[in-house]
Length: 281
Image (cartoon, rainbow, N blue to C red; front, side, top):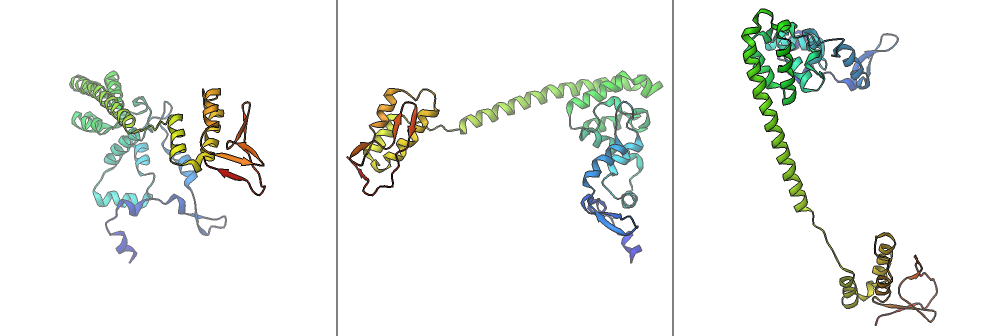
């Protein structure tokens, strides 16, 4: 039965590691399940870091591409699909650039990738890199180091490399213009969609006076608060208009307009006394 299962056609999802539920062993060698999500990043750096001290090689690119797959199952999957290590290394290098893992083409041992001696394969590879600026960086690096990378074949490949670099440089400019155009359209759309509602103090007073005198005390409180926090609102003229708005409240024989104000401080009138009456005029 187990042998029959191994012969089944594997899919990518069948060979993916579940870092959250990773098979492991305890101190006594008993099988357990552990969460290795935090360790994943640490192990990836240990196995696959690419920098000036440790260049990206075929082997390292294969490790990077297959890192999230169970090793034995990945090899079986490769076999079933008919993929060679050269293909996986090629895909791994492409993935490293697209993930931003490799920060510079100078961090790659290009001499280890014989496939790129074929200019058609190189062209396909360059076009697979999503970042147009990185495409140009790679081509510029290959041109600059053509003696080391291509040796005696330098004269045959240089014209094509330069032509590719020029076309991808032009693509960068087109890309930048398209981005600028999209951003301008988004700003224009956002500005168009943003609706501002503006009411004058006079319109508010008119509404309270003619349509909703019962709401006067609440709206007065809101306007007093605005006076304390909005620049230019706290003026005698504005205060007078708000004080005179809407209803009167008769409390213990005194006439008070909703809230009372003292200097720049505004205090709410509150009373638990029986017989407080609101009179609408």
